[in-house]
Image 1 (cartoon, rainbow, N blue to C red):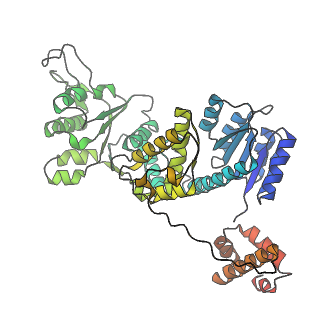
Image 2 (tube, one colour):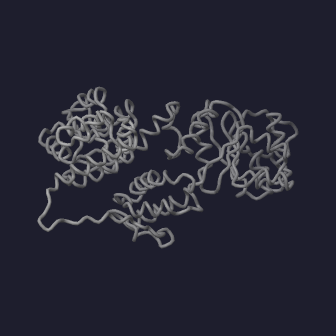
Image 3 (spheres, rainbow, N blue to C red):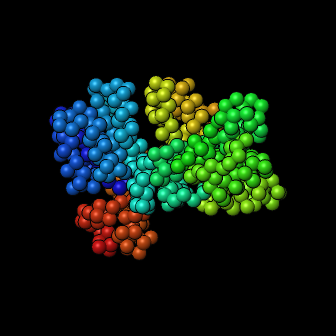
Length: 464
């Protein structure tokens, strides 16, 4: 396993030394800093992967320190501890980007478990930042995901946000179409104006026209006052038309006219009004099929789909499930005042094996239920409802027989490591960089191991 670099930041030398000694014993490369300013210098000079920090420190406290770390190196994982925590402090730390909060005194083994989870998160985060350096506004995109499909989606959101082009978002129910629309609005030059959502499928047909375009007093029975429609409410801003495929044909004609002329006529009005509203539409239906069936106007379809965006279903990006679960656990812990640590490996494997017909919405509902019912501790496979458990086949470890007269454990481990190194070199034709990659090691770490092993393992001399 590649050596991981951890920075311990605490003005209490006794605590700092204790944590550093324990983590060094566990095989991590550990650095220390007595305050936030020294820690920031270490982060600039060393390739730090994860920070463990106290909150109560002189000059710069832990909360401000986390904010500065995230500004310099957003992929770094931050674990925070304090003896004086409260719900407000915890919430602020998590909002600032902390991965986990621990109350002092804490168990060192528990800390290492959290650190292991943190490094799993770091691997996803750092891969994301390496692959997509153009995502300058990633924090303002209201979605969670590091899979290739989601990173491509985030890049597309950034590209289309600063234009006024009409966007058509397509995806199954529960994939987050409104979140995509909100993200586009937040990244656009219209962000200071209204974002107005309308669910076209939830409003009766005879009311939708008035809801969208407004009406004047006396235009129909019950119109006792003039009413501004959603289009006008979104003037200079963004109108989000969800489930656009449910809109009846006569309203489609009127919507097409608004898109073409940039003006609308409220119900009962005698003259049109100019508007400047960006339209983002969404549907879980196949609009092209509706066009073929004459249930949706072809000219309106092409007006709406100037920029089409397709959101992948959750079953096509299952690598994002652990991140989503982690985020939802933190969210519902705060909202429900619970203390669930997360889902164990078997439970996460089961969730990753499920096909999620309800997509993100279904996963979020399940996590909320588990957090409320569990209350504290870790959610296990047995805690999950039966439909989500699936069949988890755990790989069995290779059988190892212990000789009757015993064995030297360190020598056996050393021999096993040497043979793995030789196999890696054989597979790569002696290429050290590729061999290091096969063993998940840095090239420099791999070369250091080779230098140390030559004296007692002659075969490795061939690899020099």
